[in-house]
Length: 113
Image (cartoon, rainbow, N blue to C red; front, side):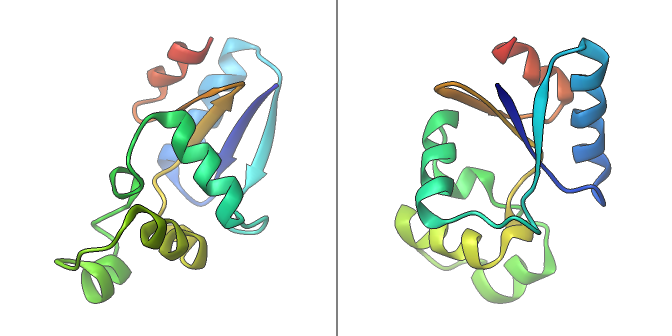
């Protein structure tokens, strides 16, 4: 089953959701700002992308600029920051089995289909 970690207020996230719908695949939608990640779950999702946690940080967010820009953190510390501040996480993230992509642009989803 494909999962989409989604923020309905985000146009890029909505585009990823629409792309999945266009493809006609079944998926589970997880609004991660409501159903928050645990440290373990986010660690697992990030590992499936093959990226470092910082690569999934939205560095243009005011919170990032005010609190975190220019500071050094370990991968584990970034994950904790992301769990505590989920709006800093790039979206949407699509997971299928042992793989995941940040679906920006939405065509990145094709890597999982």
